[in-house]
Image (cartoon, rainbow, N blue to C red; front, side, top):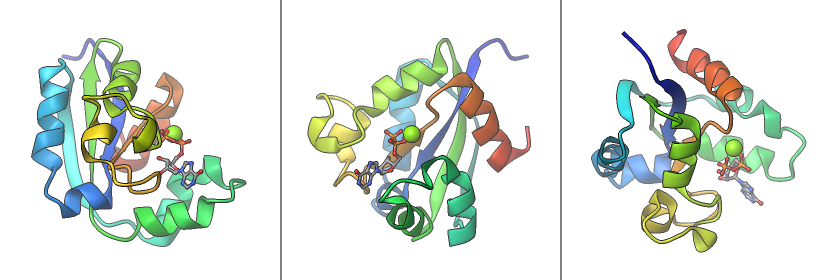
Length: 136
Ligand code: IDP
Ligand code: MG
């Protein structure tokens, strides 16, 4: 049975490397986002480029793809009421320097690229991103 909105979360290489996965998941659970499925993997640069292709015109695209493919990541499907927006709020601003107290990026982010987590930015993109990793 499923009755909530879904979103995709990624724990990025900097956070996997520091063993922050369980701490980050506990923030989701405390905020009523259920972790429906999870997998750990290491993307190739081509796969990272495919995942981030919406950013291909940005000056930081190459750096972004190198970074996401630099080490293991953990991807998960989160489900709950307003999951997309709620996850974005829990993540905090893209640049950890601007993230509010208590957000994941404020707590754990190192820099604008090593900002510990990814989250889908809309319901439509969540579907595309979940399908990219989980085929569902
Ligand atoms: P988001 O992750 O908060 O949704 P986006 O604008 O979608 O932010 O950018 C995707 C990722 O690209 C960010 O998480 C960040 O790691 C990286 N990024 C965004 N803007 C910059 C930048 O100006 N310089 C370097 N990296 C950036
Ligand atoms: Mg984004």
